[in-house]
Image (cartoon, rainbow, N blue to C red; front, side, top):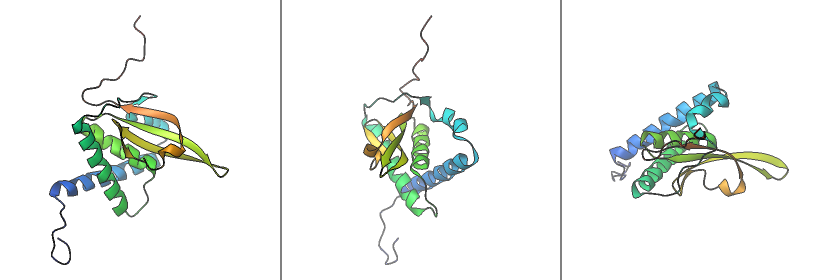
Length: 158
């Protein structure tokens, strides 16, 4: 309830979603701080692959909720979570729900300086990092298959 006695409109599920997002943001930040990226990248999915852009209503609903949870948790944590931390945390939350996603890492140049950005897509919906993604060229991607998708076979049948 608000200070003036009005209901805030948040359900227990919204609160749990933000707590889950905060936990994944914390764990992701700790992992990126403690481990080199080459140790983390195998857990991100299939390198240089992308998930389907077809979006079921369930996938869209999950992607929107996860994106909203990450956003609200990000605003309430006492430190800044980078775009990479947010994208990996959202990817892990979607993975828990059996939804496919693709994490993109891009580079761009602005005013004589190079920058990097990460964003996450599930179906056609950009879960995190969508505001800045058009300023960057995709350098790498990691595909996390969903429940219905399987990991593509990268070796030819002999």
